Image (cartoon, rainbow over the protein chains, first blue to last red):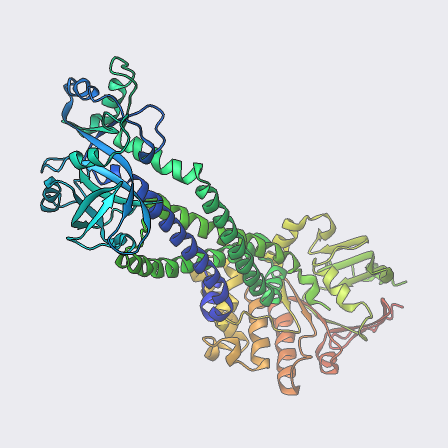
Length: 376
Length: 249
């Protein structure tokens, strides 16, 4: 079989280049957008994904980590009674007002009060044991590298949170927050920073199980007991999803992503289909001749669709290579970008869908390949 | 009205036959009757030439006889099949199996070599790869293009391109070969060569060659020359075959 589609694509690559670029940039735009959104909104669940707890216990109806309310401290013993549970520790969330040593004005901070002991669950994946141990000092805090400028501090310097003096003892990385700044401290310090006298328990209890696979079952089992006041439980995975979903959809950001994806698709498809249509028109007499010789319209359509496929595949390849480079650049600059398999697949589907739609549009112009027009 | 003597040649059935066909075009509000109650027989194994001034309806006649265009009225028989009764798919199949085309523009794909141009339609005929390639090679040899079969159209002269186009039609081994002004874009020597090839195809392969041209050089080589004007046959002349000229007007 003579590979007409591929040979034409190679021989007349200049003609197809705009389509490949359009497809490639559409793919790249979509890829980076998704990676950014996932990175930014993924940071809303960093408290969960950066920790090794399997089950989270919090106030019923909590929609994301940042909007928890205190629960009864006695719930801890209820959780510990379950034989599947290996360890339970409290996690305090305190909203604070940061005043740095330099002129930065007031900054809204999210204070995370965690267990600084080496076996502590909270942020176990984000903090090294030595860094974590420094939190055992009174009034010690750790801040993220990415917000040092924003907070106007450096290691060893002091600042105040809710009027209480704290000292920066360490710098973490990868703990960016959305809508504020994360500050890590010990449970003891966090309680001192909490200005609300009605808060007399932990915001969350986090538990590690003997068998992490059991997280869903244990979370379900622990739920619904009201003897210790209102609380509910989630497996870590469910709670992380809940947090990300809250930010994606309840804030309208998800709609924005979809809207932009639609625009990217539309613009890409318009450019790509126009280029393919021009390519078909350029070979119209040849296609018509083949049809006169009895080569069916269906076979000619396949040629056009195959060209669209290659345009999509090559555009995707370019977008992939450039995307990887840009992601590496973003990582080196602490820009939160995350790409997972479903997101990458979504990009591939979008790009190939774009190419397919353009191919179908170009296929329609084949109707003009009427061999009778060659006899004028 | 033209009513050629269908009864005068009853021995072999004609390769092509038009019976009382009519065809009109509508361009804007202008209604142009190109053919009306037009009948014609084209005998098998001959090079038949239709000549006449532009607009006389000869290209329309070629399009109708080759199954590229439908008639408004009347019947068209090609190799015994009534083309009017075939749907689009069946017409494509008929053309694939039985017809070859050579156009004024050579209509070769810029990306393909001469060999691939010829092989491409054969791929769709259900031939094996080897058979398709053997036929393509044979066909290119026949038009004297074997030494240049690796070249793309941009590396070929006009005459060479037309020979490739003829090889593309010829490789299908069609019973019917239609040529529309095949020499008008060529110089004298190349035009002569194309005419010779078409003539040879009719006589060595027994192919029915129907050629539309106003090139006087073709007239000399045709077995039969039909002069057309205003949708009618003015004269019907046999040149080589020693039969009586038969006026059909």
